[in-house]
Image (cartoon, rainbow, N blue to C red; front, side, top):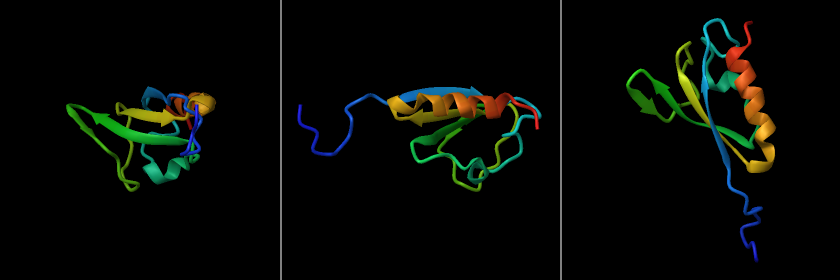
Length: 88
């Protein structure tokens, strides 16, 4: 199959990550996460609200973060999941 856009044709992987109190992500801004280009924070669920996060948004315990990564980079999703659980 031809791939004019230069994409692999693989479906992206998505995961939801619950931010635990005292974790690395708790209290940080989205821009502090320094996500690699192959992994994107696409949505934040906070209480009854869901929104696309700007870089200056602070992340808090209890937030649910929705990440998207290229299928061959799912190891990045595991890394961000650890950051949401690991105490500082």
